Length: 112
Image (cartoon, rainbow, N blue to C red; front, side, top):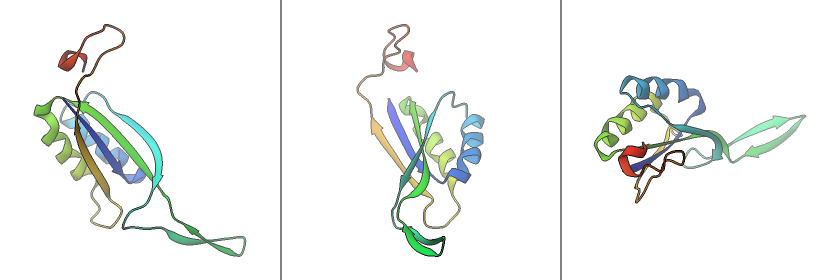
């Protein structure tokens, strides 16, 4: 089993969700986060004062899946999330030792 964490632009979330639904992904978790990378931040004016916005709003999308679906899910996230500009985000894929469904106690792929 694998855990896929994708940091994407907030405005691309709907496009990514559509792509994931089209390949049969049944569950995901999304959280609003802030971060920076090569995109850096930008400066804004507020009440006549200029200030730097270093951490930009992003969405952290987490999906736990079987090993067989990883490539399809990663491709769907890339297709839905790509704008071609700095700040499109990153995808991290990590191995999971164990997944347990709390309600039933099922373990492994059966818990997904």
